[in-house]
Image (cartoon, rainbow, N blue to C red; front, side, top):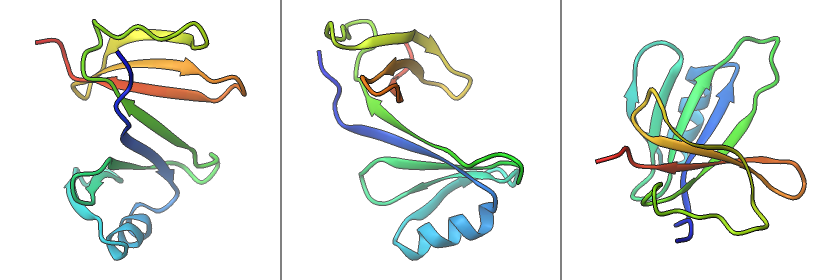
Length: 114
């Protein structure tokens, strides 16, 4: 079983309001926001965008999550270094972390167990 493209992008920002406005100006719609400096934006059927505000003293980062339809059936090939196997997350998915040959970390995201 292979990954199925990009599921989501996780973006850290120093200013939630400005960043949400930026993406809304590009056609994204606000799907959810808890009023805590974070939210989810979506543009059509594509990958969703999670934006989280962080303190000014931290460098903003970005993470791409690749989609996996069945965590239990997924078997990465030998060139893939698994950093953490699939684990349940507090936001209702299962997530695995892998490292590419240049040391970048990638998130693989699957639905929760049925």
